Image (tube, rainbow, N blue to C red; front, top):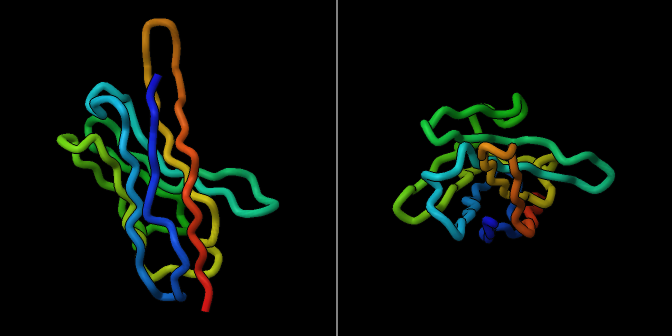
Length: 119
């Protein structure tokens, strides 16, 4: 079991910045990958950004150049730095950890943190 705790979501004006944090209950070096997803009302949950154990990253096209995913292995924490925020970025943001074991692939989710972009 991996517990994930997100923080950092809040109300911000368009063009503003936020940094979300996700702290894991275990060493993130044991995880295959960590990712941020988001879900807006009426929409499906979508992948925003992912970072692997080897520090490879990928992003959904709509956030490229604005969002950066990073991690601090010593703190077991993954960050999502969001710049130039737009109203369409409004959503609940979820952290996900992926564990790959001999028995299969397991996903663990945090409880989510609300990001609202509005003037």
